[in-house]
Image (cartoon, rainbow, N blue to C red; front, side):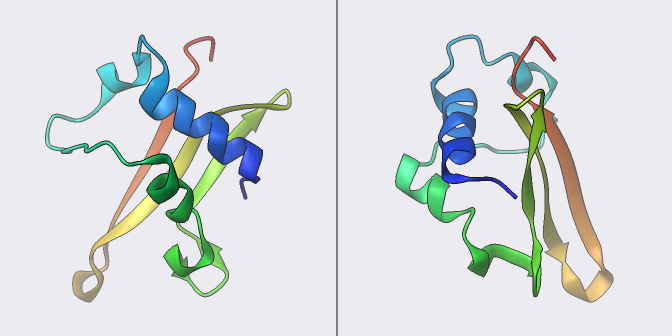
Length: 93
């Protein structure tokens, strides 16, 4: 799970970094709205778990560097439709 420092770094990659290389790979059907830093940080809190004790978002950390996320969300719990995504923000990876 991500530390506060990881979440701050991921916010930079997702919203502040100028080139936004990772967004070139986004699916066209995913609308993305910019979150404030406070809302982004809150989205990592425990109440956003997929199941009890199962976070819906994790940080990808390699060589002690935060480079991306693995996340999921329910599209429809009744049909077990779960979307999962991997994003590597750091273009060096």
